[in-house]
Length: 298
Ligand SMILES: Nc1ncnc2c1ncn2[C@@H]1O[C@H](COP(=O)(O)OP(=O)(O)OP(=O)(O)O)[C@@H](O)[C@H]1O
Ligand SMILES: N[C@@H](CCO)C(=O)O
Image 1 (tube, rainbow, N blue to C red):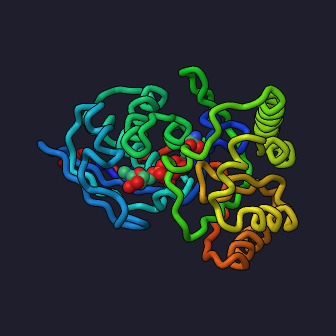
Image 2 (cartoon, rainbow, N blue to C red; image 1 turned 180 degrees about the vertical axis):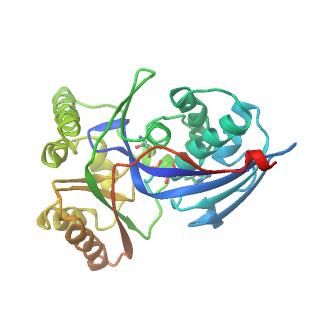
């Protein structure tokens, strides 16, 4: 039996739609996995009542198939589904790490990215990799043209999760079909600024790059209270604020010492709009880890 902790992630960061992702130090899914002749799933924890235990409908089932590695799997959800915090990806990444180890498949973490992405196709219909890459590799990740680049970072974030549900598949349906040239120029500029900010661990540069004129405005309209929460976070000292993944989570990058104030301001902003919310004071974290290995006692 293996126990794996796989972290929540925040994709896009505004200007990096389907490209940027960051592993968060918390929350996380915890998976207990042991070999079996047939795959069975149990799901407990945050939002587990909305997650199918049928392996064909769960992201981990696709990973089992890809690795030809049947198993008895118990998922303890720390990452609520339809949160914008890479819930479906955390389970897929955790399963990929556990099954690769249990069945001695020998894949590197980079090679597990497309394997875990098959799980995302189960959740959203598209095998996008911008959540599974950071959940597997940790740090800040750039997924572009089949290549994954990772960068370490020490930045601090607040992620505020309202008590509403936005599924990735619905949040992709509101996106426009195309963008104008000036919007493209603005987005490339912001993405470049953000990447430079990660390289320098500079929250102000990252914050300046954390916006885009096309994707974020379309998604923000699905989140009651977004404008208020955005403004409150900035007033409290956040260096940048945007929709986390496809929402409804909202992520703020914070200069040192301001996380608590920003977290309270964001929760208060949602509450003033009649929406319950909770905040995670978090930072850039590591990729999925095997926290317990009882293989030798099998
Ligand atoms: N192991 C799993 N964990 C979470 N959700 C799962 C899992 N397996 C299947 N799902 C389904 O995937 C959907 C949630 O995925 P979705 O991509 O919408 O949310 P998310 O992963 O939190 O968001 P985002 O990708 O924007 O960060 C739900 O319909 C849920 O039932
Ligand atoms: N890049 C994907 C990630 C979902 O978390 C999207 O924004 O739809």
